[in-house]
Image (cartoon, rainbow, N blue to C red):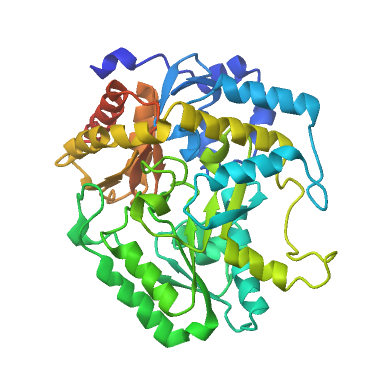
Length: 457
């Protein structure tokens, strides 16, 4: 069946020639989160995209099973966004964001709040999810200082959590390989993750694991709440392997944070704007944080943009303690905060989510993904499968010689040859399907993964 989608792969020289690239140009790019030595010998270059598909340098159509990098749920090259960006860049290409602004910054901020839980209505823009996390950590510390509680500096994250690449993000993040290379970081502790043996091959929210919140209570007893600024988690962990929250887990987390006067931060860079079948993970799981980090889907991946969304009470704390009216209340921001072109893209992208009812479509397609991906249970080397919304994670057993990362890499390369882009990292193959996906496409990509795994024998 999958032989039909196999197409001619190019040699390295053919890739460079078709892209009009020299070896020197290829070598000059130090690629992020990439095995550069391997890639430079086996370049996989994407030249265009439309709908749910990339086109590579050989002209092959490649199904995008991760929505870019969890970014393009509405599909690629949407004309509505192209038109909005083109119009904006020809009218106002850049506007300073400090002490001055432009209309679309306020329009987009308000539009974002319409997707947020009640009470989360203040938006601070940045340019990435990493910066959104950094903003939330700084605001959390500053908030307590404004309240005269400057000892509240410690953060608590979670094992397997991913919160971007800046110092604060890798400090609260719980993926060891992202931290160890860089040495000492910020003061942070980590709760256990919930990917426990009792939850193997769970469909949707697992039933076991809410009890692990007791570990947080132990940490609070150890460090004392007077020294803890915030707890930060992803409602559904994404980059750590697609780990949905156990039933009752997030509600208990909210209760503990409230009872001990600790801020709760949700990193919703992956889960906001449709991925889990609701506007946010907060809405889907019925728990409202104090601060939320967003990015990726807010512009459908077209222009870099992120934001921290805060409860009004947090915003008001800074306003009330701001001193004279001409004083700057929060000494934080960046050159590209609320960039006008990004704002135009964001407004168009959020309108598409509404107009095409893509959040509801994501929820409607999720059961089919669940059914299909769990058909891989029993396939050789598959040790666990997890799913929620239009996301799924498939854990593979470690290779005795190559370690845990080898088999996912091999499977992903085989899938690429078959015409499917899938995410591989650590011991997991991840899916983050576009909200515009069709059932036949889900069928095809899951079958390609299964066939690729079986070819490892």
